[in-house]
Image (cartoon, rainbow, N blue to C red; front, side, top):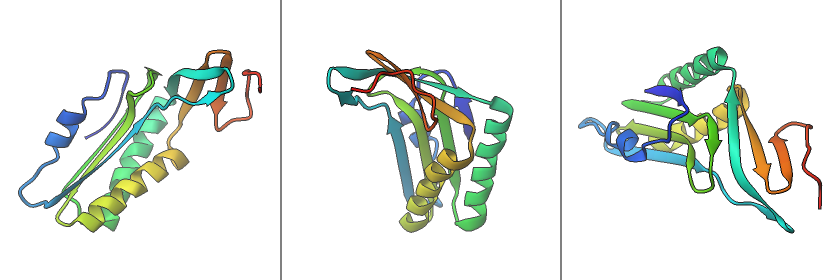
Length: 143
């Protein structure tokens, strides 16, 4: 299950769907919005945007890479778009494998590759402006 959604992520459903009798390990990674503070300003929420046709293809490419490198039974990757508030998950990765090593390794690989190749952009909305993360565009005053 690979998807991009504007709906809140149901972590329980994602994990429960990954359990299989041939897999003794289920590794999960959940990326959440954290509250960063700088002086008087703080993150109020994040906004995620994506170039959907390519983002979907790149997530499928990551799944294929995982299946080629590790013995895994289940690969689930879901990423949020739109507004995500502090404490809410923005990305979830669930990998089921016969052994824990491949499950952990494939999970780490997935999040690193998402950051490297999937065209999903994050804008941090602060109490005093915003910043596109990973870009040189900044309209938030520096303290």
